[in-house]
Image (cartoon, rainbow, N blue to C red; front, side, top):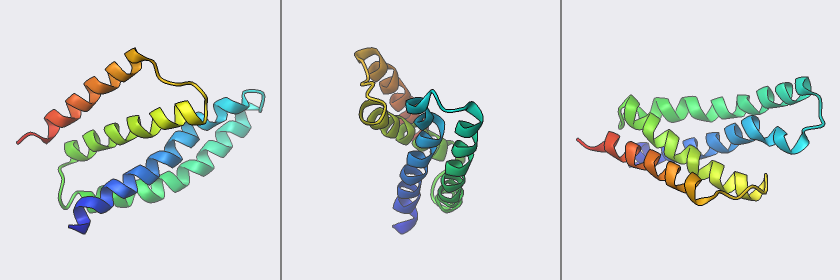
Length: 112
């Protein structure tokens, strides 16, 4: 049971770090680009510390395509909240529709 849910929790955590690493600097556009890159790399280290175990543990239960599909859906959910809350850029209907299509694609990956 733990091997089913632990990868999901680790993927959520890694995606929070990933989203901050990739998009967090957009609030600080006046900062030097090299500083943004260095900070992003530092944050990404924590992402990898969660992502690698998530995939290693998850591979005991899920296939690699299933892990990737799960990762994409989690990424979209984390990003949607981050965009609205941190960047103050709420998603529009077409963003949600596009994300919905990706969720459908991920669901298809889990069909046996």
